[in-house]
Length: 268
Image (cartoon, rainbow, N blue to C red; front, side):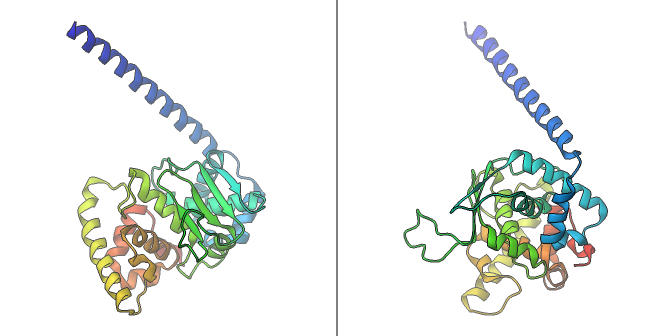
């Protein structure tokens, strides 16, 4: 009897694994097809008009970005709040910034995220009684991402200031892929040790500077916790690579290794 149960268990598990493989295979084939769909000229014009960092990208990365945007827009639902009407411009501008973090590497397109909620401007968390200040963005472990369109647009248009709410919140999504928001995204096994050593040292340094109210290249908000540190340094990495590399070369290399891009080479 036990051997029969074991056999049936093995058969059922095999069927489940085959079904999961088939589902994943179909999803990847669908994504591959959508990736190479023609990119609407109006979409690219929206990116040119609102996301100037796009102009710095090498042609190969521009093509990659457009493919990722195709997939992203096909899988994510945008929901407007406070009478905000979701337009193609809003969808494309947000998607373009988020997909900068997916270039040059295999990606599962922020797998836990289904919905992006967009407010016209800063918003308050209705569940936080002490939340007196307006928020620019939020990212939840199982979704959604919540964004202020005013600030998402402003962050995109200022490509050199190291402040980009979309990049910040989608860095959180990468961090949260393993179900935990701890400042450590999914890493290759050989990268974990140096990541922890370098980021731990830099985080402690920023924490001390923030407590002592000393100036720092990184926004002091990054001293809140390890998760916010990762999101903040990602903003600086993408938008201020020259200063980042000069002041924090070891940390820059860690992000370069993780993201598989080198913004320093883009001429920002």
